Image 1: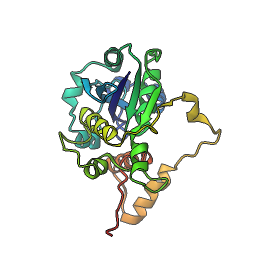
Image 2 (image 1 turned 30 degrees about the horizontal axis):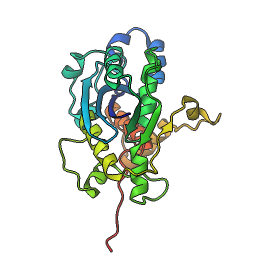
Image 3 (image 1 turned 30 degrees about the vertical axis):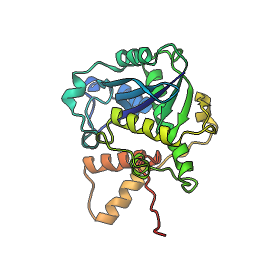
Length: 260
């Protein structure tokens, strides 16, 4: 039995610019953006055996086919540039390599936050690929790390904070999929105990309610306009939308610890 510790980096639509391959088809572009708001541009993974010893690694950039313009914030955060991803293979090819990397032996997916599994499956579905060979047993390391450090219910500890608290040596920048996968694996090694059991991910669990809450982004933009007493640029609107979306995942929540 192996642990597949993986991490993803994403791109999303930048402002009101039309993607290169959809310039003459606005309706089609809108449908695709709604179906794939986050397009995977990097998969990084570390395969560990049952004793948490490293077997092999996986690290590939992916050429986007929907959000072909790299969002400036994503570029700054991940240090991935457009030339790198545009010279890479597309998702179906890299996904096939990822499945081969996982192998036929029983495996458990390990992630820092369930969002990576959700978005991986969304990208797989979008490209009409099979999930038959993808393990659906998973361990949410972020969730267990939050419990380990007695984080307040409703909050999640950040990966960088967990690394610091566990005194794990830094091996590279955060927000690089292969580095974050490595760090996630190191956290799992440190906190693992017999009570940490894998769960089975079910796609239907995402739709437990028929009521869907949405945020009126135009109202949000209006509030910012009032605050700054000026109109917002397209780039500013795009940054606000991206910050809101990323904040929903609680990936960047930090815990303020009081001194004793």
